[in-house]
Image (tube, rainbow, N blue to C red):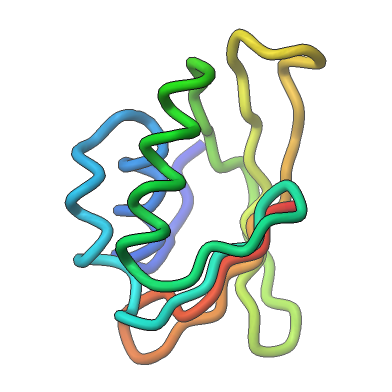
Length: 108
């Protein structure tokens, strides 16, 4: 399924699927915040380290399957498939944008 997503979110999913993590600067604001698995990663450097560490621990692919607007957040439901217990799983990615970049991301 092809979804119409803002460029920053499309870039984020490309990075999640193995594109160069240095592209973080293209999609996240300088002071962006990511909440994943109960941990908060604040700022581009921390977010880039989180992406690299996650990709180093497990192999996975993320496929967005639906999108909805919930207040000021865009929620993208994605199927995550990989070499982890419980694969595949559907996770909601709640994005808040500031202009054209991601200000915050919560993954549930």
